[in-house]
Length: 123
Image (cartoon, helix red, strand yellow):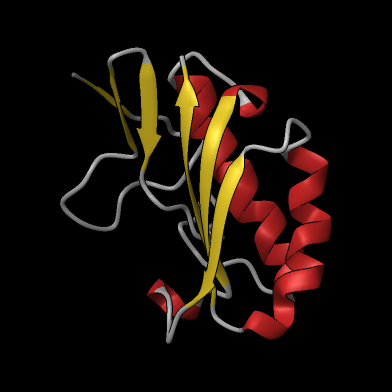
């Protein structure tokens, strides 16, 4: 198993890796909308935060040697299901191959983020 780390995505804020590669697949940890350089949550609505979170997960995928078009499954977490439609608009711009997906509302997310996303992709 190979651990993945890139400076182009926020550093892990706990005892975990940004991703792990095994068996030809990469499993990313959840990415919230943190600015990779400052580590600070980006300000803005769900569209701004979703864009940053997805760009963070794509940076991790690229560090693992793959891309968004090879994503098999996404798991999306929203702080408010009322943001579902707006989140989908941003999501559709990046995940054009339409991977399998789960999307759920949760009580809260780290640093009071509005969304978090993790993926499984082919390497």
